[in-house]
Image (tube, rainbow, N blue to C red; front, side, top):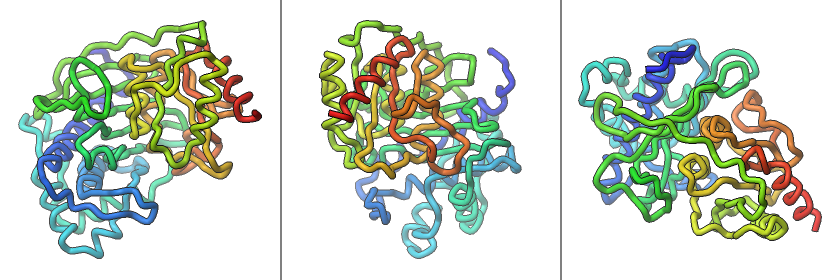
Length: 352
């Protein structure tokens, strides 16, 4: 096993994500997902709450002084006894079947402790100093509800820089084909992880100790703009798809790509496994800023494979500005060799 400065953190993150992924898989087998709508109209399920509690329990137990930024808070659970009971049952019932692996994690012992752990994530902020874990317990909740692609995401940011990223993809096939409807029905999906400076590993998700993985090759450093293969989501309500299409036309590349994924983090996964090699996000509103948990970790995977990531002005993405990528208006994600051409195409498309 390769050792590095974050060996312990990576091991814990992988195990925590694997357990949370199993938790979400268990809920997928139920007909009633216990869902309701949040204020922003995004569907949420007890899987979001239980997975957040499960991951934070493990991280906080081992690294009690680290900041944690999670998407959910416990307000809705505190107001709904049925959802609370179901979340509690799910959070405490899923364990890894390897005792040594499970012993590295932690499970809340009471409902109140579970609620407190969830709120640790809601109260956290990423800064430019210190250590902060960011997590999205279910990135792509809408597609999760349909049994399609989603990701359980965890990353570690140190002094504003991503250093560890782990994405569990419970429905990703072992042959690495990516589409919403191509779902792993026989296994537990795949997990991708990265440590800064050490590349990207993919390994099957399992039920116990971590399974062996393989290193992913870097992305092809294409120079012909026709070789850009964008991924997008045609269902987006926050992105200017017209500009996306114009940028692709300027480059002379195909658009839209047959690979269309709702989950933001799964788009980084699609790049990592070779289903595409780029994406852009031009927000409809100038005020729009992405949530940090929708990108941290996934960005590290892409960067480790030779992808450059900037905002629409060509600036690097700053992960030390709180709960959003506050200094980042839009995104351009492409192989380093052609990122400049993609960035220019987006600039021209926005002005046309």
